[in-house]
Length: 371
Ligand SMILES: *Cc1c(COP(=O)(O)O)cnc(C)c1O
Image 1 (cartoon, helix red, strand yellow):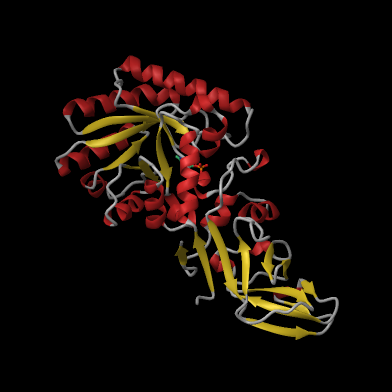
Image 2 (cartoon, rainbow, N blue to C red):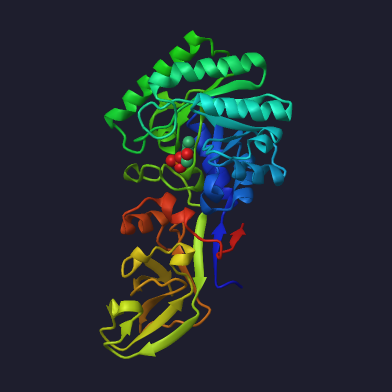
């Protein structure tokens, strides 16, 4: 019995994926499994996605994709953040598809492909208005030309044209229609330049767009957060998704303290009567943000309790009053809410962040246990 664990419901992941696929009929599905499958565990998370019908997987970094390959996963994988000195040779050898947004990167990928003796499969990325990754529209034609000439020499194969939304989680935001129009324009430029063919996959939709923007589905969709059961647009509800992760800990110490006891660093919580405190063995090193001090709630002994005082590196306290509490009792920090526990969404709301940050920060000391 571990002091704390993150229980991951793999059947919830499979069901969420089936629901997402039903929103994008006719489109392929590439699940973003970056950041350890959003904290759920890269390999089991990826396998659950494939079991749920994912056609492909996506990662931020090449090393994440190489981990998937090393685990024996043979599905197509795209990696999209390629800083200098990434292991491109290994990526091409392992048949990992790569995103490119500059002629220089196309050349670097072509070089790796030449050494590997096989063509690299490349997705060209256009910046349609997020001003993050992707070639600016003004530089898009030059990127296409370079990719076409490398394709002609046989070192790369252009297999995708893609972009990413800045505000898909803000339905009705004017930038969404502008980005879609810019994407269509970029696709038209690609067609005119000679980058065309039914094998080319066009993709732009993240979870929020899959669920709210039918016109953004193109040939493939890229769900991330919704796969793990967390709503990409909380104001619109849960879309029928089921949270896959339940974070639990076991009370490590119970004690009675008198009224006016200052609790934890800085004495930011002071007991107003004689009471029972419980020590929860999880802290900010495990992803329980320090900002949760006196703020976030947990379920203990069948009732919600607010964190009492400062969240420390490895622990925090709860105050259960005169309720019974024993060492070894289970405390639920968040789950799907079915037992009255908070959800990751409630944690995100109380901390002023998004659920992506809540689940991806759960640290490596917390074992993932799969059901
Ligand atoms: C993370 C990511 C996604 C998935 O985003 P969600 O909002 O979690 O659905 C899709 N595409 C790219 C490029 C990403 O980086």
